[in-house]
Length: 243
Image (cartoon, rainbow, N blue to C red):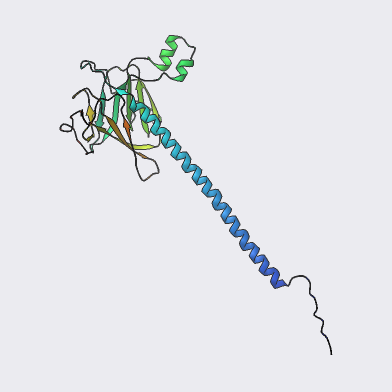
């Protein structure tokens, strides 16, 4: 009886090598795409996080300014006011008010200059500060867009000029202000023509560049005495949007 011995073969055939190479190529491509996607996602997530942080910092700055708004009770005091102008659509596009809680600039505190030099560089300090916010600059500036902040210390009673103007945020393309009088949200407020009281709260709606949806937040004015039980009673004389 003849026995056949099975021959042991070593190595791989050409077909097996081709299949293995193909599988390794597919796996390498998949891993490369996954890595590239992960890097891209991480970059976009970080960019989105930085945008969100910048937006929150902007809101904090704006909130800090609005929270200190105040007017004096002296009806003859023209240097203290809370004014909101309206554009062609009836929306308030500029807000100007006074505050008595302005912080001194850090550079001023650290400066070793003479009083005259400090006054020239930083302006007069103390007393009521005049704050004006709008998307159009009042003076000459190299910046053509954004939310502009004008500050004047002390307030001089002229709400249209004076002080130092800077860009609070260059990415703001539009902004609207609404004011709660204890009953309704209003689109204008003028303490020169009505009771010398500031609104209970300000609702801010703003739009940023490269974003489709606006952002809205509400700021409670700490120095307002307007409440639901003690409204300013302005809804009959100013446009209201409802609570």
